[in-house]
Image 1 (cartoon, rainbow, N blue to C red):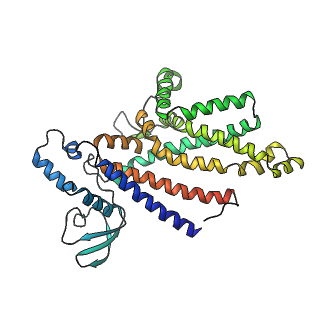
Image 2 (image 1 turned 135 degrees about the vertical axis):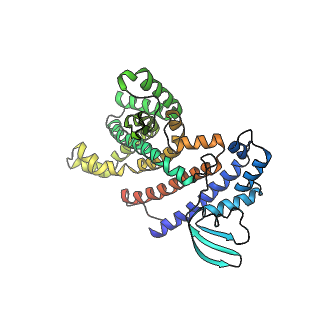
Image 3 (image 1 turned 60 degrees about the horizontal axis):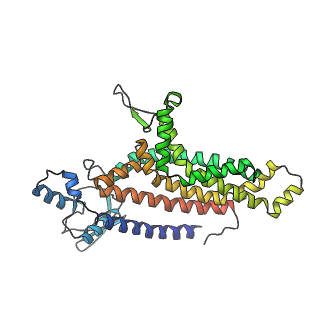
Length: 358
């Protein structure tokens, strides 16, 4: 298993390298000037020159790219003679000096995601740490709704195969998979937050934390979680229902299930002791993929409901050409995909002993 994890991490690092490379060069080829976005349209030429030098925009694009790789890499190389954008003298991050080779110092440090262009020089890691918990809460509640309802409805759909109930669930699942999340978010916000507000007491928009009207700080508003979590969970719910149904029907046709029936076990005992566990592999695959996707796919849902998470932060960064925040969030999402996939592969071996680590 240890060798398996090492191999996965190695390919994960290569994936992150590809993500950084693609996003970095794509962002720098988009129209517009990040410097003007920071200074505003009234910025003079001298201010633009100073800011470009500060952030290294006056360097060739490949040089900027290498500087950025140096910042996010745990192992960094810094020249004693060249102080341009090395940050060692500015104490922008903590580091441990390993050795010196001529004019080059090799240090080990935490990945440095730089500073936001638009948030008064706030570190990108701080921006992420402030918004990620809100997105994590939203994604966890959404996936729990999808798993709970999906497995239950999938089991009943398999037990009542080809009945009206089964067909109804199939229609609902198809709608859930086909309707875009942003459209569902708008419909649910309008219906339950506006039309039926008198009965639901739900708001059209709102985040997990709200500011007290009397200026006494913020408080948690749990009811604001209901609509975005349910909307975000609709598509994975639809997928889990169909996967659970089809996998359970396939398991029912196995010889050991026939043997269990011949021994006189009840339907409940067969599902609980034999069929359910062996039917969960495709569900685990879907859940893992969807959970990681929720952290990325929550973008439009968070923006529509004004939920202060990384999705909303990413849209704001795109609008303001805040490159460090965009790349930082993209790296975070890619890293979560990698970690979750490794975790899921380990779960596979527990669910199905036939699965071996390669």
